[in-house]
Image (tube, rainbow, N blue to C red):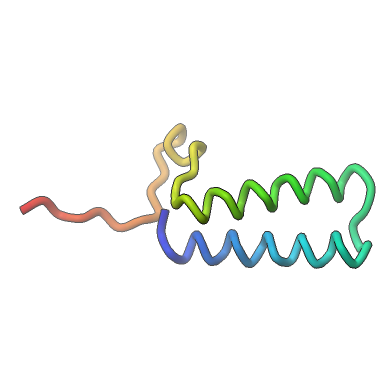
Length: 66
């Protein structure tokens, strides 16, 4: 996972967290978005997204073998 991808995920998770804790988003939608933001944070911390491997997406530049 590339660094830009990580930063975008953390930024989105922070926005969702702020909206949830200020009661802008509530109810079932709020809970679902909070779970999604936790997943975003975890995947950015471990630098791995299982969905990317399923779809063959790479956001990190490849390193050349010497």
